[in-house]
Length: 187
Image (cartoon, rainbow, N blue to C red; front, side, top):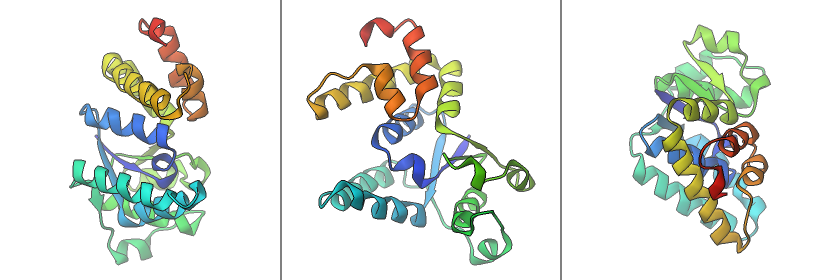
């Protein structure tokens, strides 16, 4: 399955790390465009002076790991498409150009299901998407979340409750599913 990742799911670190960790397990193929990566770079300015450099390093790492993930929509495609927010047309165009099955975004209202269906696409939010991945491959998703959780603890110098970390990362249902699973004793 090919999944176009919108900027809003790439920029939050924990969410991105879980999504790309699951992709690295072979559960889906991530896609993005140069414009999506550019939006991530610009958003990273909010992190302070080191934000853009950090984003640039992370972007370099993911583009090396997935060299075929970057898609380039044609101008004719951009001109043909319409969405309620014209600033999101490039996301839809990238999904079409990459033959994606799903657009993963937090912005449901900007990607009406009817318009996406006309292009053979659907949309999902990261929490629902990852919950589905967990249902079909619980060990793989649990392993990824455990690694991300350990890294969050290491980087912050604190001990995060795994469910609270997932909630903060806007993945509350995944966090709940993991807390109810067999691995919850390792939180």
